[in-house]
Image (cartoon, rainbow, N blue to C red; front, side, top):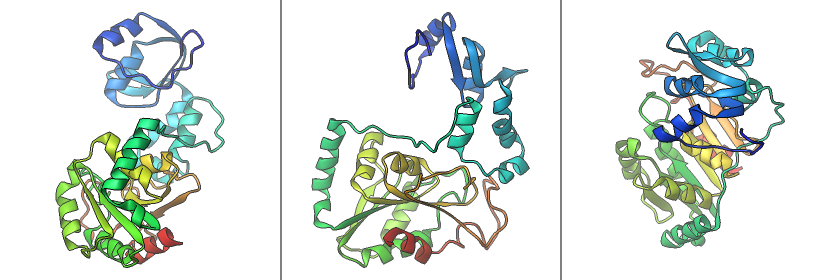
Amino acid sequence: LKDNDLIDEIYFDDDELEHIYNDHFDIAVNLDSGTESCLIMDQINANERFGYTIANNKPYPINELANEWYLMGIDDNSKKKNTKTYHRIIHEICNLPYTGSQPMLGFPSEKHERSAELKAKHGLAAYSGLILVNLGGGNRWQYKKWTKEGYVQLIDLLSANEKIGVGIIAGDEDRDFYAMVSNEVRQSDNVIKFGCDNSAEDFICIVQLFEKVFTSDSLCMHIASALGKFTVAAVGPTSHTELDVFGSGQIVHSGKVDCLCCYLNTCPKTVNCMNTISAEEIYGILIK
């Protein structure tokens, strides 16, 4: 914040960073405890500073309010004990009251035009209901995305009602997984395959077209929630308590394993956090 102007978000290149290092701000906030962000924060001059900086070449909390989130990043037990959503946590780091406000993703007129083009291209007007299934989740955590069998069963259950248009989509990282699922689902005209080659803007425009979205803990979940969609997310190795769909949807996690929020990259367990979530359970939430 500078000169009493409210700045929501700015991205800087190296030249611009050199410029702001020589400036002075009323308030500086860095909620990212990554090294690069903390190095930048360390060189910012401000009257008040919240979040994270660098100390002894390691990210470190600037203010006492940031200690809790910092500890969650280095101590698994602190992470597992947490019951606060991330949105509440970042408000607390900045010493701001939290009233349940939710993120909002702006959707200007040109994006509405692009969505209309995609709607016409895929014949979505023919359906009385639209549900999008995001198959992505990345490859960092083995079970961040749901199981192949779960996705196939869910899509088949949904597409059995020919009045519902069932979209399936994924990002580039999940191309192989998308191919496996899309090849095994019931081949029907009301299963609309959006593929993995959509630009970020088109991905958002596609999400905007659907009334309900099922996804893992992923970018798609945050986009859908910020667009006000009914969002259902299946969560396993990451923290389900940190996530929020703000009263429109549900965060689903297994009640049959005790190792949730493990943040393990791989898992050797036969019975795990994802294969104990059933397609019938997700289906029941989506069609209620």
